[in-house]
Length: 181
Image 1 (cartoon, rainbow, N blue to C red):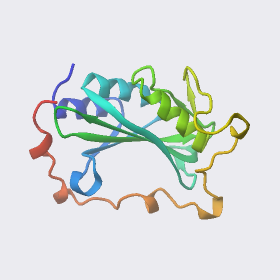
Image 2 (cartoon, helix red, strand yellow; image 1 turned 180 degrees about the vertical axis):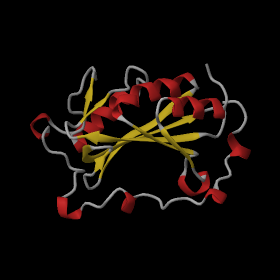
Image 3 (cartoon, helix red, strand yellow; image 1 turned 90 degrees about the vertical axis):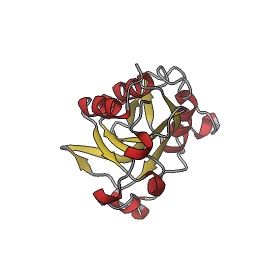
């Protein structure tokens, strides 16, 4: 499918993703996309169809909050995608629900298999439809030990660990990414 940068952005917005252009030189990515659990796989398929490869998958642990009436676990999944042929990086994130389950994208990106298993080891996030969600780095008897979860009193809000809101006049990605992807 491929297409242009604008086509990709429009397709992601049509999925219901909240898309924000960012300053690549400040943040290391051009677009930040906020997803829901229901749109993770559709987003990954859209990224794949537009020629993006998966850079990494990880989690972050912040204070739990209520998003659109749904209480979150305080965990966020973070995905980063990029393209080989153009300078365009995309960070996508999704709040992990209280049941600690997010859809696996390893059927779309095979490399996600390892990343999802590592994220399960370190944060306890489960990935539905993952073919082999066994411990990757920790031993079997430590499968309930998640070393990157923080103590509740040390948690910060998502806003405290995020970049501050960006001024629109700082966004200048059109010169780098407006050509076809």
